[in-house]
Length: 491
Image 1 (tube, helix red, strand yellow):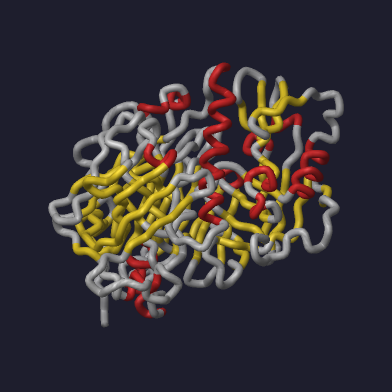
Image 2 (image 1 turned 135 degrees about the vertical axis):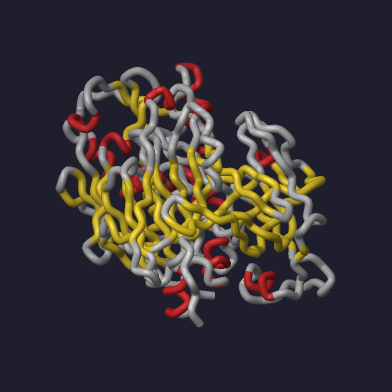
């Protein structure tokens, strides 16, 4: 449940900071509360790997759309842009004594889940060069019963048909046939809180999360295997909502992913600088749905039917950082591509895995127009050529906007905006006021977040990235610093 106004004021004392920074040397020993996060997919493949790289991105989004369009509340972690960002995963600690787990960071998913001990089909090794750990609920965890409130909440508010002694179970099947199943447990999530600038104190919170007992399909593949998913969705089952209900955090968070330098920021709290304009979230939707009003290319508005962006069943616009690319209804996609390449009539195009690709030398920002999405409340989102055109070889580019009808028949009328359009922007999700907003921003700089209780404002920094990271991505480190700003709670 959402915290009361008074509780929200107190809860703003806690900030969770994801400093997406990269270093080629180990983090200093004194950096307590710092988790190393790596990028799952490199930006570029070799000439012979281009088609498989694009196919992998499509397979990911295909699985993800199976969740977005279904009545399920369990995530599949996201893959970032096919440019500098990639997918990020972090190491979290669960239990007492705590053990570490590598989980995908996904703002478009709802719950945290990790693979369980003796899991059927779960990978035991990873091609990412990390050591996988399976969670043992017999340690400090406790199983969630079928008759408990959390179980009913994840079943549409209705208790599932099972006995009170039975565990609360989940199962989900994705569009490509991959599946995951298991049960819910409650245990301690470990984190560090800041008692002052640069000073942290160990802390923890009790959360309920999924314990995966069975995986099928690509989810069990060793090549890109992780321990689980960390979701930041808006349902009451998300870690964010659970911490907010416990008066640990406000239901406000922000992310800023830098595809130019590879850094970024992820923080929970009130962002006071920079200021962002917002647009309302569509009420009673399980995802971050917004009202899109129009699209323009180079300042010229696309001429589309007036009901093109109406909200409804399998319609409307979703903001989802767990989706790699961006998907548009067929008519919108066709009209958009015609406008983008209007002055490139002599260009030769090639099709790779439904991506529109071409040869081009020179600066794409000089050669192609800016695409602007306009939303309710006079909020716009600019997508620059270096964002929607990504490189797959020397002078070979592909367009990151795809026809949604080719991805899934149920999503043919839906606009799905993923990391392709969200990168290089500070995106703020204010779930307390049910709005979302963004602004173009240098994600390698810093933002300021205010503690409403004390009135103090704290700077949250991101770090610059070595240019060698794009070629040695397996050495990149992203720092996840989970901090709590200490203040006294007055009741």
